[in-house]
Length: 277
Image 1 (cartoon, rainbow, N blue to C red):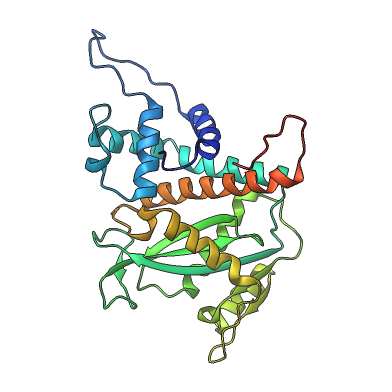
Image 2 (image 1 turned 90 degrees about the horizontal axis):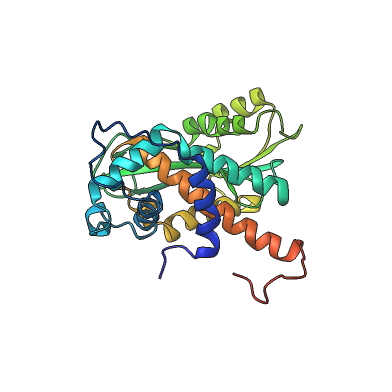
């Protein structure tokens, strides 16, 4: 059984394949071993992301763990994961429409047993190594960008870099943007930042009962990350750029899945299948 349904991963792969730069064979004799197909490596990376297994556990006779890591790094250097995420967001915005007028930001702390560049002492796990994801979503919970840092970093200082992810949309932003935040952002520095950026805000008050409001969508997306992608729930990567690549791939899957579900009831055609994928 595939790690992700073919109705979701196949469209993603076709777009991903189109972004892979051509490989130049520089071997003088042309007698080296055949290159492992990109689709095989891509499927292995999806399995690593969803199942959270080690590369050595996913590897087999068709593709070694070294090949998976090497090809992953090649694609990261080429910026393919970031481009794929952007294309998925643009497609969703064109067909469904992103709700950029209402944004939510929240931090999520996960275990990082291997330490690394984005690890720090976790305040919620007895000082063990952990990673924090500061996630930005639109009004429906579509992930728009994410910043990773050590688990010991407060939420509020990460708000600025997280909101900078909106630059990927250029000038296609609404005139008024409302940012929904939890009580961890209830301080003067956060309000001053949002005032400088020209954003309205709804911030939960400290010391008062739980106030979910419109912010629940970011909590749901954090749950999608942790429950749907084991690699993000327990972060075993030590380099930030690799973590960012997996987050971008997870965002592409979430966005494509949401696009298919929304389009199922919005668009009609004569040959539409009888059941939703």
